[in-house]
Image (cartoon, rainbow, N blue to C red; front, side, top):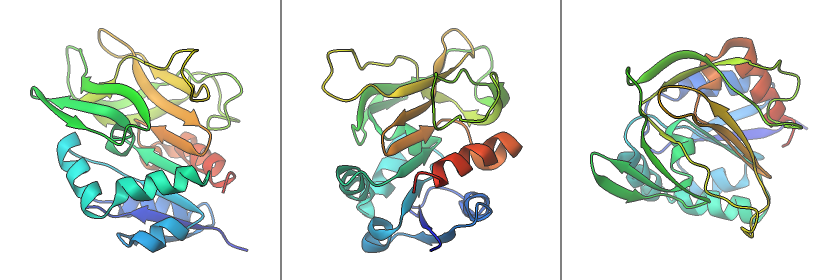
Length: 211
C-alpha cells in the first residue's frame, strides 16, 4: 500500500518544490492545513521559510503545534525543514524579541555569528554515528542552506529524561550550529533536502523508509 505524506500548509512560503521532492520518493502527497488530514497521514512534512515569530503564528492558526504534539505522542513520523526545524525548539530570538516555540527540544534559535549572513549555499554536515537519517551518505555530504538563524548550542544533557537524539552539526562563522536532529519519530534539518540534489533525495528516502 502506498504511503501518504501531508505537507503542512500554514502560510510559510512556497512549498511546492518540497511536495515534488517528497512525491518523487513514490509516496502520495497532499498540501493541507486540515487538522485531521495532517494527523492521519503516514508522515508529516513541516516546511518553514521566513521569521520564527511569523511561522509560529501561522502554525498555531492551523493548530500545527497540536498536530505535531499528537503525532509524536503516538510515535508517528514528523520531518521539519529550515524554520520548520527551528520552531521545534523552545524559543526563538529575533531582533531582541523572544517567541515561544513548540518546545519539543530545549534550546534557543538565534542569529548566527558569521562575516556573511545569511548563510546561503552548499556546506558539509558532520553526521552522528549510526544515523538512519544520513544512512548511505558519505562523510562530509553537502547540503543546501539558506538561513540567518540557527540553534548553536545543544542543551539536552545525559540526565535529561528524553532519549538522547542524534545531532548533526555544520561549521559556519564563529560557532557551529545544529544542522539536523534525529529523535525517534521526530526528524529535522536546517538545510533544504529538496534543494540538495542526490544527498537531499537520499535523506528523504531514508525518512520515507520509516513511515
